[in-house]
Length: 211
Image (tube, rainbow, N blue to C red; front, top):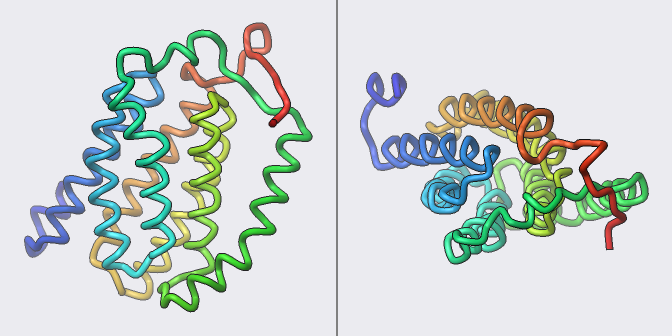
């Protein structure tokens, strides 16, 4: 908010303010299991799509679209029953599931980097990794896996590098607000992993293999 009030007000700065505020609220409601995060996430996602597009982070644009399709829209349309799957037991992957997930992401990283390099992405290496990790985390959320927060943590770390690069290169006016917001995401992901309804509970969690 302070950066918004002390800088020149533009379309990008207004959208950045709204997106970061809605995105922060979304993460808070998600970690406590409230379905309103679907609506908040949808609003912030549209903002992030615009921000990433103007920054040339085209892979992150697709990452936000995946998030909207797999999480935000289903939450909005099924808000009355959302969370029942979580209350009935959060699932967690075994070692084999993690190995397959990590190998799959690493295999996809280079070809997706090449694709976005051809498309003119401003930082294809880190942007491609953001897409891969974010999409994987979204899929785990849909399937009811608490492991999604481990991937959100990794995704937040990668996005910090992505936006730090943008800040140093100076190609996006949204770099600093995005860095601060993603740092907040990192904190909420830590809370979500260890203290929220998505946390692992050895006595209650259902540990299963990835299909």
